[in-house]
Amino acid sequence: MKGYIEERAVTIAQYIIDSKATVRQAAGRFGVSKSTIHKDMTERLPSINHVLAENVRKVLDLNKSERHIRGGMATKEKYMHQHQLKV
Image (cartoon, rainbow, N blue to C red; front, side, top):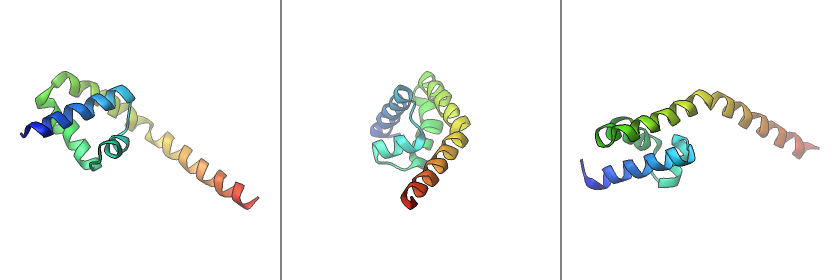
């Protein structure tokens, strides 16, 4: 594996752990696709730094368990905003 890919994986992992970021937020922050983030965190990182990979996995699992709540809140805000525009 090329050095810059390993470095990117570690940098992104540290960002996710520090900020509790979602895959989408990390992808936007680093200018790569969600697929790249996911591959870096689940396939590449465990062979680079196992402990860091475990910590990232905890954050990603928590985000996944909360995603339905975030989606519901986003939908609620969308319709509240539309209602305010009509009034």
